Length: 69
Image (cartoon, rainbow, N blue to C red):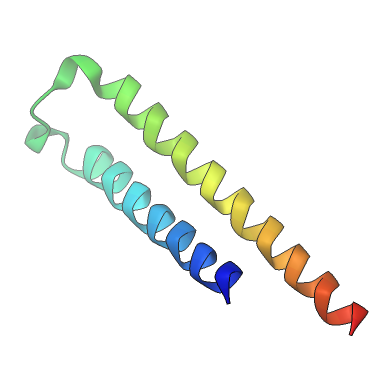
């Protein structure tokens, strides 16, 4: 049950970071702080990659737990 909740948190992080990246790339005029454009994109990209990796690890743990039953 806890892993399901944790997975959902990471899914939300993926969705959030994807939305921020899309906004920056499609509508950069609406971005207030142009000086930190690359820093923000990198930060959101790193967050997205980490969350996707965490999801795959949770899936692996869940899959292995089911095999052991």
